[in-house]
Image (cartoon, rainbow over the protein chains, first blue to last red):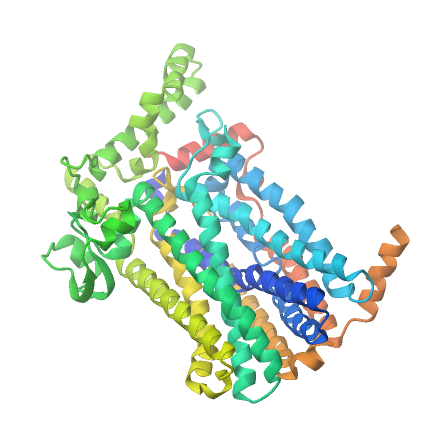
Length: 531
Length: 67
């Protein structure tokens, strides 16, 4: 049945999900980071009693509130789409996703909602310490919300802690802690939340730079820059370390994604990392027409990719071709072989259902035992999703193998833009801190302009980060188990197109509202805005 | 205690700045659009509406995900 899926339906469903997720991700990272920055500022106010810090705290808290209000519930649309556009996927993973998302709803959301009210309504009504505690708990609650959805996403990248039930066709959680503490989940949570801290820090220093450029509220701006640049610098260092952890995890569980991120077609020992580069030809041309050099121009750092992947400059990193066609020396199973094994797993599941329907109990019991047998699971079931690409005609099968390569050009540029911008931000935070401490910051106009213009760049870095994570793992919805064609619902493409445009209009409206209210409050400045 | 909490929220909303009221209006409008327009009209649960039992849903999914 899966071979009859309309690919335009898959593409529109993917586009709709990407639109919603990327729009949602405009608001989330600022909430994650600005919550902590506000809590830090308020802590200084409570410790020093300096009313200037109260004004500073209130100003940034108001911007936090605007962002929170406009962004809240935009993520719920993703859940609507799971049930309607991706119903096979929702069914397949229901039990795994249910637990983390339920915890998110009950614990983190209510924690945020309760304490955010104290944050905004509680000035002069509750004690300073209680108010401060509420600010901290709001920030922690927001980050806990992110934890559960990121755990769910990490499970899709590296499915662990579950067992497939062939009767219900659902994955059932067997070990919650394996799901929660898988290295993929830990790295994803830390890398994503700390990147949100970087965004919020850049938001704070960039707006503060605007005040300095306009020679307004200079004390407020300098104090904000101190907090923003220190938090931003530390967060960027954390992003680098967690990114390193994430890269090692990708090398282990999603080597195709890593190869795509680096445009590595042929594996090698001491593989280089590209500082930047431009790939020659299209993705399709490079696959169909193997060449010595896949780049028009590039700046390689020898051995660095090997180090990034395995912590060893001389280690072997497989390329796209090694995975497509196999590499015996390095024990890499070809995708063709994986497809054949996945096909066997799919046929076994089909036969099991037929046996059940025909009341052939002996056959049913015999087949069901396979789904309990670890060796069979590791040999065949592990590649379940690959079976979709099976074709008895060897030529068609060979062509199908190429569909398992993600869009390399997008993954490559997204990854390098993200890393390059992260490096720039580290420098910007360091210089801002240095010149502010030296009390010369208002004279360094070029740096203030760089800080201001880094605000759109930090949003770009966030979006490219998600492109790497999600485009880089195509065609998988759940790594090796379910691809987008298997996951999509059999619904009308036109209905997905209609809702795509309705969402686009709604999102544009919300973005305009956010920008307008936010800019008005920023222009008013801390005194008026902070009252 | 409950009346104090209630008063706390009422006072908070009463003393809210005009831009805060605008935000609440946007939140309510957004929630209405999301839950009463998008969810009710466009986003029914595909498997829930098409099949009556979990057995039927499982059978559909197995057909859909196998070649």
